[in-house]
Image (tube, rainbow, N blue to C red):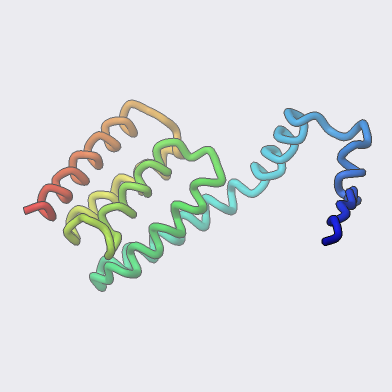
Length: 150
């Protein structure tokens, strides 16, 4: 039997990575965050538009659409520093997920939408009122989970 020959090939990417120079990681991260921040206003407008569509889906009692729109909102909120908004939208996703362990309850969804609206109007800042809102949403979420357990 013949022995296998092992050839070492160095890719062009490996060669480029070995060349000294380039940006420091911290500089690259700061540049990326600055570039992303230029899109923040447009993202906030998109979040407001999604919230309006969520109101329509609630009026139609369409759990699937509520979940899909909340998930899209969560994705958008995750790109920017949105503090309490991300937490509130994640909570909405949990209680509206058709495959989740929460009972579909329209008033609970509407409470979440009201809280999200307040957080957005406060520019997604962490404030005393946003902390109170998040505590209230956690309570609503626990109640919803307890209903599904019984």
